Length: 211
Image (cartoon, rainbow, N blue to C red; front, top):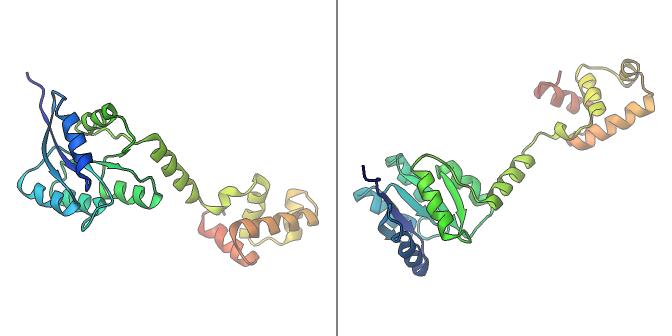
């Protein structure tokens, strides 16, 4: 049985980029470029009359950018696989593009064979993320971690006791440490959590299920 031809739409506001991608993709026996679009609006319009298997989508375009185009296209044609192909690695673009439904995120510095590989992976529901983009995504996830994850084990123990309404003396007695040490831990906890006083720290501990 002959292998199914992958139908690709190339979306980019730079003509030379479109021409270059199209010329290379057309050399692949299992890929055919069914169209080109110079902005997101044109891509949406194209998909109203034809449905490619995969779209190579630039992000920064006028009047409709790649993220908005991705949302609009997938709302009507969820079976289409959209691969972001952009020069930008900004966190403000990566997350919205993935959330919009893009299956893969590549940079224009990618080798031609890497783009072809991503296209073939896309039709098999396999994601391909540029390593630099993946690093940015992980960095962003770490930024979103909860403040108490920065506490030491002892500080976390003290915070839990604060959440249980214990006084500094009671904490010292429970943990068999000096009162000055407790005060130091409390000061560090308030600083790391961004709390102004023990009451806020106690509320934080309860809201985050630490007690």
